[in-house]
Length: 250
Image 1 (tube, rainbow, N blue to C red):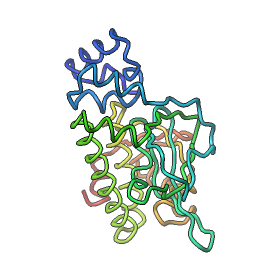
Image 2 (image 1 turned 60 degrees about the vertical axis):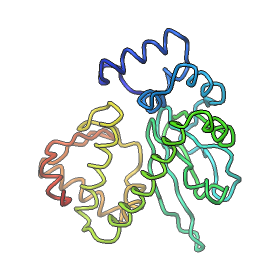
Image 3 (image 1 turned 180 degrees about the horizontal axis):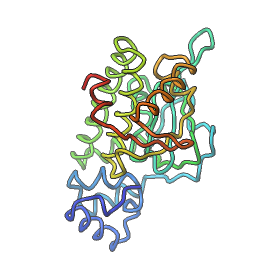
Image 4 (image 1 turned 180 degrees about the vertical axis):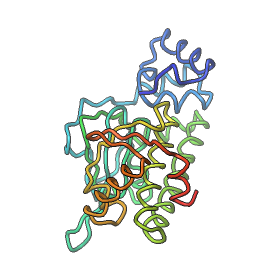
């Protein structure tokens, strides 16, 4: 869902070429991840033949469930998703949030089963990439394999970051770090770094950060009183990025 006004002139020209040649990937949030790889138009045409574009998923509708056979990776096309795991005692842990252009299901590759439950946080859509066919295509497109390795590496990095967030930071630092992380992720995809929509609930945020819901609600109120942020419903504006960065130790 990238906005062409926010990409470089070179990417605009490339995107226009793909559009003129009727490559459906141009209209998908995935295209900004593909074009910088140097894939030729013929490669994009081949890739497009295996991508399955979903109908909309409604809020709370599952995308996949833990322990089910791994068949496909998914890329968020619009909306957002969350992943959760369930402990033996029934408690649920929110392990991640995913936005347009981001892959879901990468952690299933090793054991060939999905490691978490994924569900839509709002009306959303995805691109489904059948993994076996992606492997076959990767033999002809080395850059595609490089991209997959890059995404896997980023997933590992995010996991380590979450461990640090949950184990070593104060409640204030956790929330500030979480907001700045969302800011960077939206900015990379061509959206505003300071104004965005929080599709997840306060309860999901608290669960993800290892905090009580009351603590998260209190921190949001205090951050707003301190003029670090402004909240209107589910919309949030980051008013003082520098202070947020200092608060989370960056």
